[in-house]
Length: 172
Image (cartoon, rainbow, N blue to C red):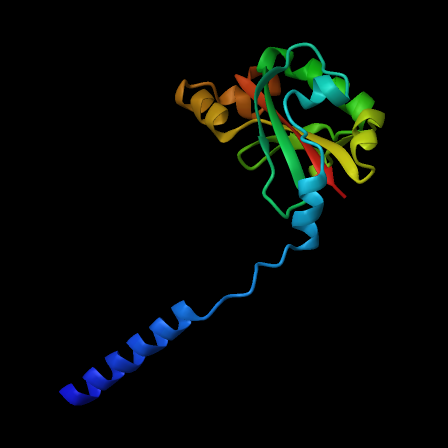
């Protein structure tokens, strides 16, 4: 039995050593990776750069999308609940976002209808780029409202402490 185990270990060691010494082919660059490398850098305050930014929105941050994915960049904004109605109305009128409705645990656009921004400046960077936006209440805000005894935030969006807005540059 010991001989069998020793033989198996020696075979495994020999295979590992041979594999380590075998030259590996150069990593092929995929079309998506090559295309992404040639794309201009997109980021920062996406609404300020490529759309009209309604009053009351504050940029929280912007991050790049995952390599090889359709999302190029995501900018996150927040707006106080008191100003959320004006921002929602602006997004609905100008960008076609759905009306905010309460589903399960928070507010979000009806039927998931995101807004879409037509931006000549963004299309100039890449004709396949599109700017999509959505607005919602995060679970933390809703939890804080409930913890403070404000059950009205579930029925009246004006009583929600803050809403988040996500603006995404997508390659479509």
